[in-house]
Length: 359
Image (cartoon, rainbow, N blue to C red; front, side):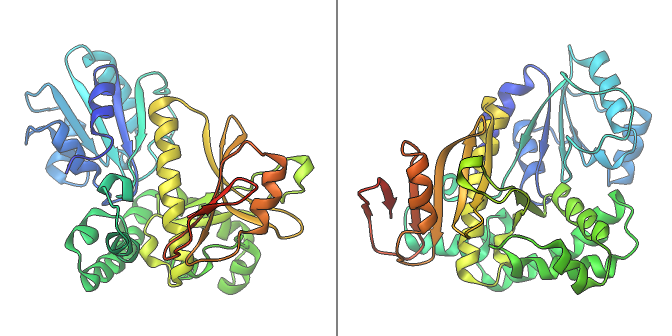
């Protein structure tokens, strides 16, 4: 299947280098090989022969190169800068990596102005063309990563998810981060799916794991950099008495979340983040995904903002439920902002007098 970023990458490669970031096994290398089809064009830092070719600058005679996981090389930014500056007139460069390619900067000259950065996300309902509840339930259960979803097998999906977490810890984290206490970090990874949907308390995690606050905060940042989780900050303005510091977190592999209601919320979060990141990366729009919670515990699961102003409110329910108080509250302050309450299995479809769409 052709992924949603295919045409954008082809267009961007005509101008600059293109970096494709995103979770491991989300399809970055497959997409890159679809765009640059030569078997000789892909050099993977994790393969010894390819690594030697990269370091010795002995490239195959091609017009475009794919560098996969090159961010694991400490001097990768200076390396690509020098290569691009010398070869940009004749060589197209596509870089893929499971860590944040816009984060790992180990010193040296900046690559600013030399590349476009695009984030590839798991499969979504829109990308798959899903219109029926049966297929949507399969996406909810299996997750959006291509391998487990396309197999359509629950047992295989669970095995894949378990192996995925193990590789994340034993390969990516070990190769990129200075972490000694891998045992407690693994316990944190196992604990986090149970906490989806509520503000994340670092103090509570610190007490559970018996480590200090700074360590837990560092580990969460590592998991975010490696695209295992993402965190949302609260949307707030002085007049709506919002909380300002508490963050919520979600998993790119939403199949990990045990509660089906929170798993649905996590899946919607991934869909909205995919949309927001695409508009930011490909269209240059200042789009952010946030959530709302105030001091009186009124909440809205998701708030999309553009240029720091709200443009969409979304509340998730697994089945039919009364309209959330938080939607009524924010709709009073922002009457022109579309507000939706969506459900996975609900039957109701209407618009309230306040203009809140339930479906």
